[in-house]
Image (tube, rainbow, N blue to C red; front, top):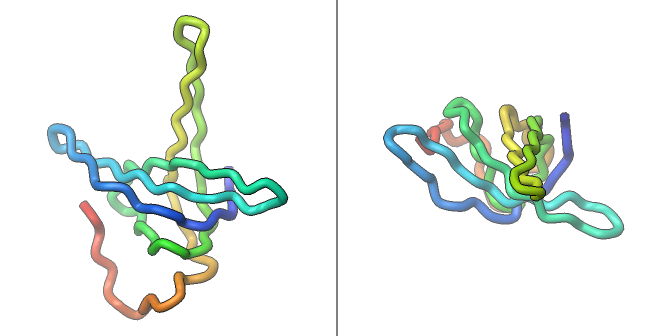
Length: 97
């Protein structure tokens, strides 16, 4: 699934026994904007700057446990459509992992 979103917040890098994940909070624009927390598990995905407009390629999974539903939203690719104001896109890529 592809979704055009704006990056609002980048959370701390989580490292559990060598398995690293990064969570970013994004906003889907529209009449009623929606905040969406997305996890990045792939070290090859470049984490965008706050304020950037991106196309996020997502895998969405849900599971039911004791009558409640739990969701996983993982981003496996990111394409920057509009860079955040004041960022330099010419700097070399440095993965957060």
